[in-house]
Length: 444
Image (cartoon, rainbow, N blue to C red; front, side, top):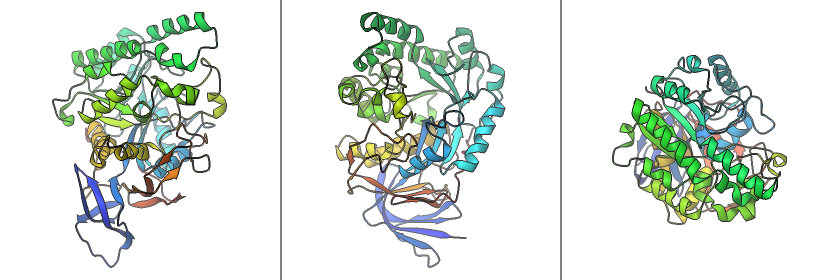
């Protein structure tokens, strides 16, 4: 069986960086040591390169099935591995919405044939599918997704009785999109009465406001505390919401966790003039104060993990007036290098990036044998050159939509190699589509 030996890498893992070697065999990490010799292994010289555990993105929308003109499991998983993301968890607001066990399993079958990265899919909740939700297998599915804010199809869960039933009945992790729909609709009407259909993009964080986020997030937290639910709140966007989260206990003991997304850590409302609808996300990108507070929340562990909410749309769908422009954008290819740019800016450390994009995601979701560089763990690895500047442009974007809010940005770090289950799937701009990723398993 083929072996691979990574030599003289700067290994970033579990709070420290040390120089050493990693031997891969049978899809797993066989040995980690300061020096390893194995004449039968293919050597990869890694002097000066940083070796990270593969990033795990717990929130993506790869648009498959039903919206594949925007992206699909093949195209977006290619973008993922090119960016050092070796595993992802995909959301249920596809067409059809993933609201039955049969539809959920169809997505797994599709990924097995298409995805270069490892994968899991959230089971979707609606106002009327509780019986289906409770059939979900906690050992083979990442969680239940509840949209406590607007979504496509039949996925807005706004019935108080249904929320109580979901939070009280589900033994699984529940992940929530938290925005109060009533507040948003009232704000929309206020701005529509003022501007008609020509609402400026700068109004987006005022329409999808701090109040809308906090009202919904605090409701989710209250329900979770009442029912002892395992709750994970997605894409926190405001400083105010940080008061809802605890940093006094270890992550593995938390019942309530939360994430920050790349766009909320990188952009603020001063960027709407320049980028317009390209940075229209739900929840909205808000103020500089919010952005800086989220970074502090990561550093002090009120926020547990970093994700992307990768949600591609075509440029035609984005280049519309405020109410018509789609919300979301592609980020999975650039998430790791964006975080490493914050390292260059002295706002984070390499070790904190590995923690928030790999270790903590594995701990939060209890993923089996991934998220760390440990002997016996799956060989999901990423090599990075932290001093090889490159510019994002349409020629090197792999997402099917073909654009990025980072276009024109020069990143100082570059992903050189990505291994998924020991297979080199990306190397210096070239993809190896010969071997697909694996379904994630969970220790629950």
